[in-house]
Amino acid sequence: MEFRELAIDGAWEITLKRFGDSRGEFMEVFKDAAFREATGRSLDVKQVNTSVSAAGVARGIHFAQIPPSQAKYVFCTRGAVLDYVVDIRVGSPTFGQWDKVLLDDVDRRAIFLSEGLGHMFVSLADDSTVTYLVSAPYAPGREFGVNPRCKTVGIEFPAVDREGRPLQLLLSEKDLAAPGLLQAAEQGLLPTYAEQQEFLAGLR
Image (cartoon, rainbow, N blue to C red; front, side):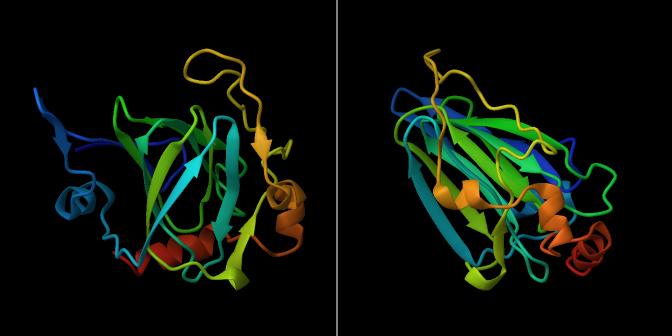
């Protein structure tokens, strides 16, 4: 496994080592020792989720409040998605910024997002299948979102699918009804950078 830190502190792109022959291929999708060495922490998996999305489906920007929030280790077993990490931490040097990683069934990369970060993806192919290893179970009372079309964040959505065809975005009513980043901050929904750093320090 190769880990590359993204532009948002607390997020990594992971390139998986693949072993292939005439039968197909094998890879270790998650390896605790390599993960600990790269990130300086462990990932105590409490739940595993899978979503299947048509081309153009956008899911996010989602996050859970601290504590305990929800760290996510995400990979795509079929199809392709453009996966985004969004800095929603009030007081962070990169507040409102984002980075992205292409997750697909060709290059076989994964992405890890620490607790306190926002997450979304856009499917680039029909039946894109995404699996999430998460550090905490779903808890409706502390799960929130930021509108994916928030101008403050300014997500650059893909214009075409992985075949080069025009891509029409499909957004849920719930995600479109979510507040913008600054509105969410005013409502006290967002984590602060200080509390996130304190929480992560307790995991190391």
